[in-house]
Length: 107
Image (cartoon, rainbow, N blue to C red):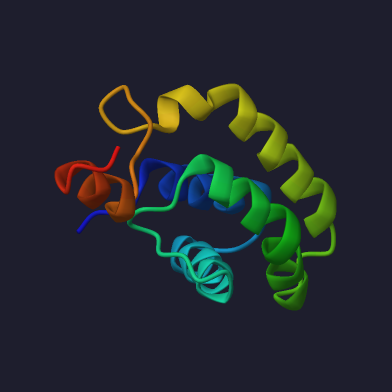
């Protein structure tokens, strides 16, 4: 399964803002998501904002990124501006729980 558009966007920003290579950036973000109990394939922009603020700063610092805090602050600010374009098919990405709830007569 493909990664969520928001995940790909953050990885590209990490590459652009730091000296980390593509695989390092993706692996670092995956570790941060794992620490939060989330997966790259269905993470939402709102979830990523929290991960960036609370976990990714430490992960980047551990990898020698000296200005991780301002980088993460810029990513969160930029993500707010482009959040609608990070959705799937023009609508917000839905978690499996939401989809199954709707199929079961829930939402």
